[in-house]
Length: 256
Image 1 (cartoon, rainbow, N blue to C red):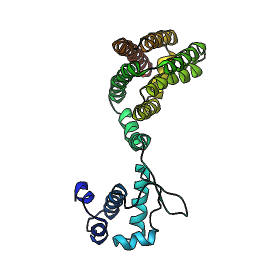
Image 2 (cartoon, rainbow, N blue to C red):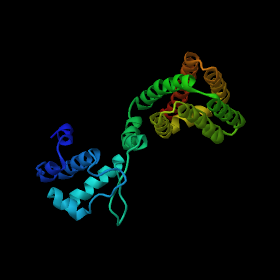
Image 3 (spheres, rainbow, N blue to C red):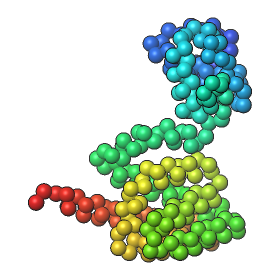
């Protein structure tokens, strides 16, 4: 049955409605999710004990435990050993954590890295534009400090990489959209290898720092289009470095 149909049912109907699907735990997930969403089990409250849930839905312990584990991964409950699950509010991080396994698998496939770089470029350009529109004096000062930390890290690849990430993170924070900061963190995790490859190329640090400087000036001037253009050029340069590095690496592996 569709989720919309489940959402429209009352608590009494949900309890009385027998489970007949082959995947019983999935059905239990849908019902518990609907009851959390409609306020039957509000945020901050504890779900009933396992035995009560088993009786409520007419299913076994294994199905209830599978359902609770799935709800935990979704961020709807906090499952704690020896305690009843606590109803929680899902976050953008929960959503992206659910995607992490699939993202890493996709990255490993043919063209995966290129597709992710393209997605990252679209995302980061939009972030830069929005950051320029929303940046206030305090935001600009934080971005300046991130830029200065990045400049001070030249010559230390690991430190430069960390401060590079921090600069982009501050930009995402300036948008005041928690989804953007969560996406930023996920992309950093998924594309760590590509970023490391890029910074090993000769002149990569200076090029990245110059680009960051241009982005900073545009954001500090609240010039959205200039910020978007500067970020776009920055990421095109990054993509070119990654492509060249990967081609060189493949060439060294090729049989002679």
